[in-house]
Length: 175
View 1: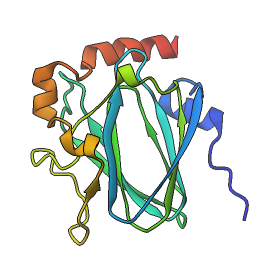
View 2: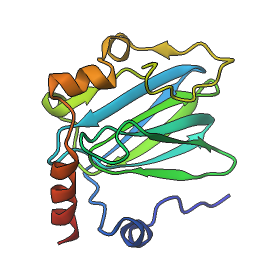
View 3: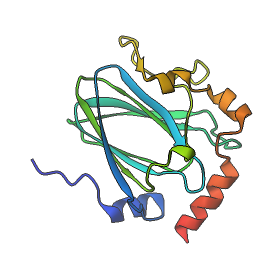
């Protein structure tokens, strides 16, 4: 098998600007492990190009941008080693996934490096979001993700990015 899973000009044409890659990460998770909902302060935040080279995950992107017309809405797609899809997560959006198989690997190309002082999360089991985690799996969360605030609590705490700040940052990327 040969697979071209990332091509810079295709991503740039699709999202309207190049994806500068500053860091590449890989995680491996047991079945039912949930990671996220993670995000970083805007600017610069962290865009991600996410791919699952082994196993399967249900990948979820959540609009956490306060003031966005789609605030609190999400989209989900299965990433796996069969269909070999990838997902682009723009700066200012929340990202989470659940491993659907033991040993699922997720690879991330990231626009900025990890900076713990800029990294935040919201609770992936937030009832108001009602994310589509499979009913036949009992989610396994890290202590950090289990203790994360709900989306509404994060909004009240003032840790979420604003739609206006994200739009302004996206313009700098297109320039």
